[in-house]
Length: 517
Image 1 (cartoon, one colour):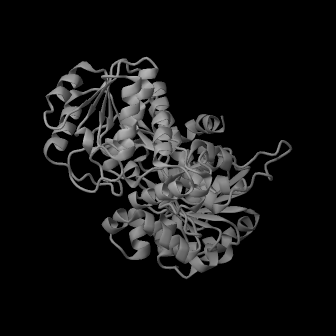
Image 2 (spheres, helix red, strand yellow):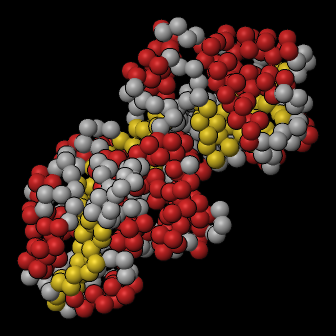
Image 3 (cartoon, rainbow, N blue to C red):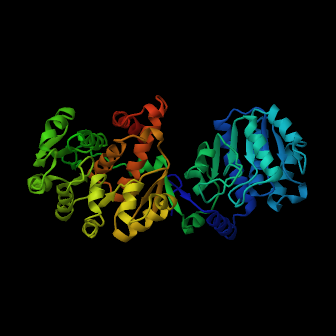
């Protein structure tokens, strides 16, 4: 059964309706769920926003009902609440009408219905100190027009801090592209489940910060749901961090062999190795062309180095044979950052995949080489993590980048299932496919990661977690979370545009400490 503390399910609108149907069958009526959702959302608002005169804007359906419950709880907490329902009383759904009556009992005269004229909405927007948007939820599948679109325009133009319930009104639940007018929220409170629109751009940019409010779905309902994907929470990330034996020594925590770098690309090998060390690997050896070995050794005295035979600054044809003694000592391989795309590099990658029996991470130029050694995927099934960006993924599966980006979840799912590997497809959001068909989406991170070298740090993170004993699936999901969470931590202090991959490495200890706490 999914643990809501450790992961959040991502559901389509159809799956959401199925969850509600199953809950009803299990004895949790729409009234119970609405009360639970509104109460949880009100708690978030009271914790996150200092609204003294909030304006609650409600629709006729379930989202409006949630908003009415929120209004009642805010009023009972001392807020001077005004509620405008943009419909006639007789238009309310049965459960929403019940919540309207309960609000009227507690706060008489606070609810007003606007069937036609939006003038009172404009007036109240000018007087309030915050807006709670409960017009439309996850069931919307059409662009808004007429007075509905006008109401959203008024909310956006008012410039008040805005909290949307479940989804910003106007966003379609199941896609990343808005259909038309949509509320621009500062905070979106998702009700128990995330939807694709919470995670995929450009819809994601309308949501502001996102917080999940727990709803009283029976445990057996959560157990039977088939989510589109899952999202790791901070508690889940903490649970996945490998333990540290108090009597452990360097051999206890694994030996990562980083096969990377070439002339002009020594930084890729260094960043990868630093990521592995920072996340807890006991030993790291960097195997690189002999001419850059002094650079690498000087930059990272904590790592061992092996100089490989080379041709013009890149690994040469004899590199695989030279690596044999080191390969036997390694417990994890990280291959590819800055390695180059020569024929010799491709042959080295093929030889390593054929020869190794340990967990491994394939990134960058190793993925380029893999396109010529796809038969090796069978050899590494069950122990490999692949970390392509959309361009590298397009080459692996002979599809366009646009096709990859339009179908990120299923692309990751299919490739992982077909080849028995873990596939981490970089981007926003990163999609991590597991061999069993599960997909995790990572929501941490920001544009500070959009710099050359950030992916090298991620490769090292995943390799270091593997060395500490994490499974390939857990190492990929956790590595992506930690990578992004470190960037988010840095963004509290420095602009995203100024962030460097080396900053990530330096901030990793602080991010890991925050996750563990």
